[in-house]
Length: 228
Ligand SMILES: [Mg+2]
Image 1 (spheres, rainbow, N blue to C red):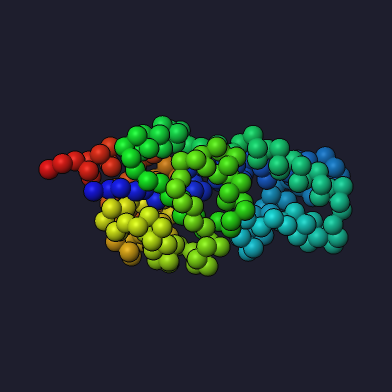
Image 2: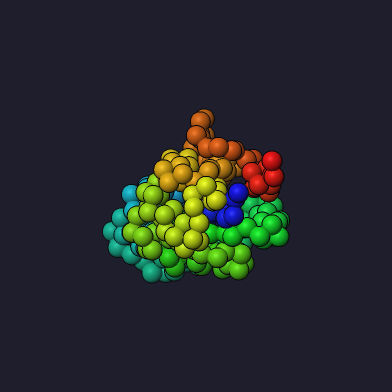
């Protein structure tokens, strides 16, 4: 009997990579408008290079890239980039189709809901609140809560502890097979692979279920909970 669902956040509930791409593009346009003389493609490439090195949540990314490209930070260009990024981000941050329907469907079924994300606390909460989904979740667990990222069993064990449930009563949905699926399986939680959010072109997710639309989760939970 499934009594709770654990959700990954980025690329499972929200299309994070699309948001990132559009925001970086807008930031570079704004920096060029403010006087940056670096070609657009070269600048975008450099930004992703730094993201790869420093992490996709790096908040000082433009400082670092400008210092590297120009030898020093030009604050006219930096501020234009930050504003360009923020404006685009607000306009593009959105939930995947059917997320609201799925979450309300699960609420009606009496299913508890938890987010387990590797993102740092503040950016993660800002995304959840900006998307207006904060009230659905009974617990929100992030990297700062356990000090370990998925596929460590720690964040999953923390979720079970908070829920007061056994692994077989919980299901996990996520887009990152090596982290979400592997981590949840380690502690005996059933898994759903969010193929719609997969950016690695994963062939074998290893999950118990795979979905191309998050709404399929409702039927999976119903099926799991069918009285024999
Ligand atoms: Mg994810």
